[in-house]
Length: 132
Image 1 (cartoon, rainbow, N blue to C red):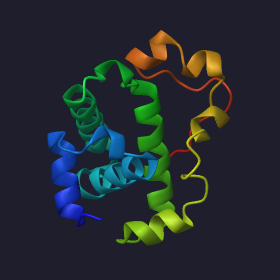
Image 2 (image 1 turned 180 degrees about the horizontal axis):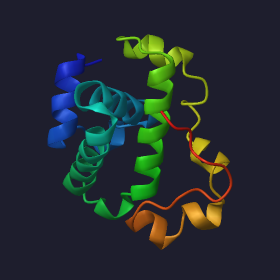
Image 3 (image 1 turned 120 degrees about the horizontal axis):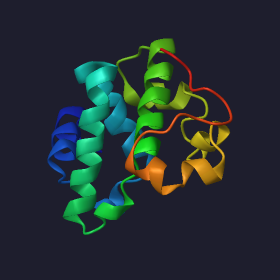
């Protein structure tokens, strides 16, 4: 596993292999961006990093704005509850963040996977997102 600073630098530059950038890596990158930039700026940093990785690997169309924003908000919420400075400890204790379908607790599939939600953030239609 890359040290946090190197992992974050490679993420932000889009230099992580898409095939090896799994769910836990998305959570880690988001967690690190929130730690470094705060929740408000982290959203833009996470979006830029994911877009850069997707574009570098020819899959730019897979980027999804609502899903990215939802994860930033969920991870920020859990960070506020558990402000540890160790990602592995955080991830082990942050119940639910390992579930890739967690956004579907807040959104119907029709809304979440719509073209509107892919292009821009759409508020949830089932359950509000937690507030930090």
